[in-house]
Length: 159
Image (cartoon, rainbow, N blue to C red):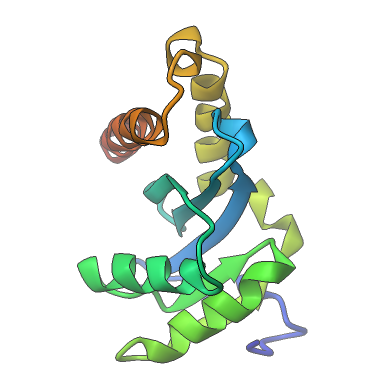
């Protein structure tokens, strides 16, 4: 983990060119399928959802593989920030494999940051929607999550 001004990632000066990803995971039961896990990646300081999807837990390290896959689809971030101790190793592994290595931070209070808080509140609205709750299969849930993600990013970039 990077040690910047007492270990707080947000002590780093963020400019328009700086990219940070907040990475977290939740049990799939919150999303309608208990057999899967959900990986969520939000770009900070912009309020942009990079990814949200259900994944079969599979082999150890699947989270790092997903972060790498997403980073190579776009430019990798300068920082990977998580609120989940279990993800620090995956974030570190992924960050070290980038062409320009990313710093990794564990920061519990980061979900109060507006870019993340707004995304999570919007996501909570989706999870309480009756139409969303009617989806049962992982494929159907992922399709609805992707539709929400696309709409959320469109709304975020236009405001």
